[in-house]
Length: 79
Image 1 (cartoon, rainbow, N blue to C red):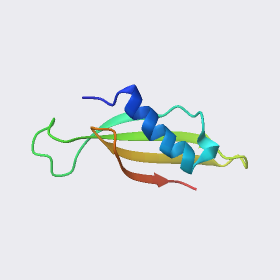
Image 2 (cartoon, one colour; image 1 turned 30 degrees about the horizontal axis):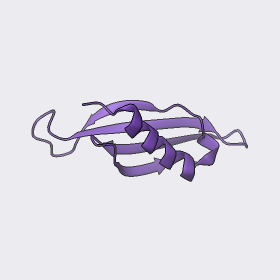
Image 3 (cartoon, one colour; image 1 turned 90 degrees about the horizontal axis):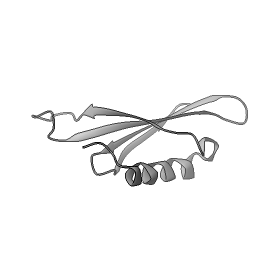
Image 4 (tube, one colour; image 1 turned 60 degrees about the vertical axis):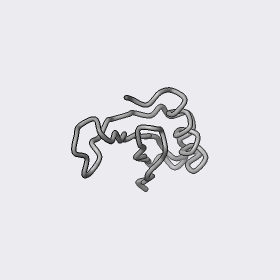
């Protein structure tokens, strides 16, 4: 089951709060298989990627790993 729009909005709000320079950047969502999952549909995870520029014109990429319920598992960012 893919992430619905309300789950994606919740994830986006968390990212925009932590990284205000990415506010308004649309995310790209990719499906991932969870480590240790025995069946392909058993435990869905999603990679949500935000890519934008800082005011200093530095490209920033924020990767969010979320579960099938839209809960954030991990956030990592480039500098």
